[in-house]
Amino acid sequence: MNCLITTSREPTRRIRSFIKDLNKVIPGSVRVNRGKKSVEDLARECLRYGLSRALIVFRAKGNPGKIVFLEVTPTHYSYYPLAIYLKGIKLRREMKVNDVEHSLGEKSRLMVVTYASQGGKIRKAAEVIAEGLVTEYMQIRDIVNLTNLDLYDEYVFLFLTIVQGKKQIRFYIFGDGKIKETGPRLNIKEIRFKGEEIL
Image: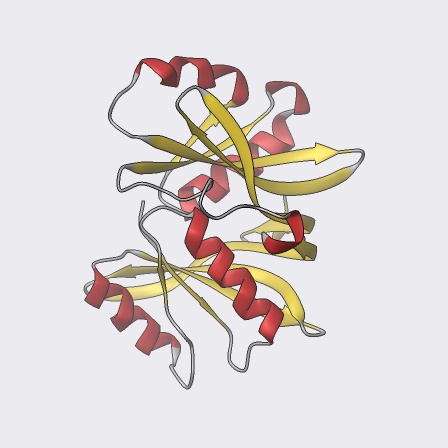
């Protein structure tokens, strides 16, 4: 999976830090400063880098407030009908993540994962996010099966979960038989697909 990561116009320092964090943990991603670029310009940037998706972070009261996705082909671009509304975020530096210990190799793979026990709604949301990022969805219990695969040096898990009633996205790196949270951490207000709240 490869995507372009950018912001709405006039991002705050915190939003710029957030997309830098996302760029560090999403394999194959390219971070682009928005500047005065239109949506059409972003689509062109995707094509220039050979990418089929753009992830765009919008602000709310100076903080990351919403994530949307742009689908891009050589002849067309449109918004993928997914919006992730944020309550707040925790940056990697605020989690005291060591970049040396949590750096991605060239052969890394992003996957969206959930607990099977957390039900159908969270699974549906995870499947939609995976489709938006053009990657795979799996349940956490199936991670053990990845230890027999040598196609990738490590996996990055975008983990959609509910912790003490709070909807969250957490990022983990899995490699050499070890799994570690790498940040950032996103607190979710709601997830909407085709205009309807799905989580």
